[in-house]
Image (cartoon, rainbow, N blue to C red; front, side, top):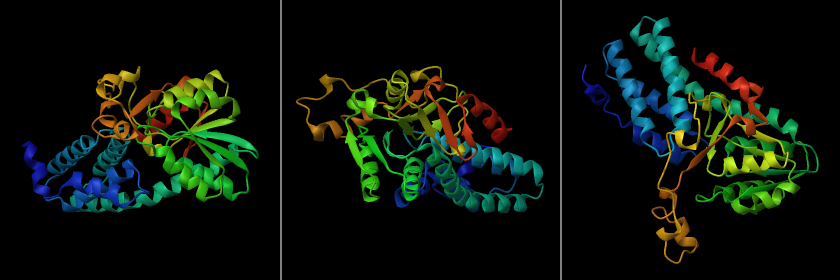
Length: 320
């Protein structure tokens, strides 16, 4: 068949995905990717299993190229495509197979919410009274964990990095302060200075790779290095659907690598507005970095508390 099979769907999967991300602030990329593929199945006009599979593969590839940071999106697509392959082998009836895939895909969003709640209950056990926590950027599951700990009347303080260039740390600080949790925003460059006061570091993840390393918002790697030097535990909080089949050897192995990082010559007389300007700052710097497994103390997941070496075993269970 030709690569024009996807045209038979008469459905813009990229637009649907971005609409989901825009309209639901609580949805994560892997979940939005799976729901988008489910919608592709609903609109499918494929008449054979071969056409059906090729259509989904093209839709998955289209999604992966629809955003600059495709790590977690790719994890969701790959996980669902693996489920599709298994279902096709188990169910010989074409229509029954499609209906089963649609039904299971819809349930995935509910399960994703349950995953976060499970992780929050697990991770908050590692927060004790009168501790000081350092977090980086904004992670939905880290937020839920901290809010869960606060609801159990645990008293703790939080430092949050501002997380340039997107400054998502400001959003995290607002949520925590509204919940009554003492929160202080710090400069990204003040991590080394503040680490002495910190009892533990909690970060989310865009993706957890095969060796237990983590791909997350830019700045996570340097945070992990400082935590290791100061002998502070570095905890990663992530849903298992963010486990991704990648094995980066260094920062430049990431699929989102950006080589033309911003130099001071790129901006004349910089001020806050110019530093945050999309074309002059955000687009010229990498959005994520890679933290090797030796810097990770433990991972809190819906599969339980894992050491970095345990991730590869779980990936095998998920994909094989």
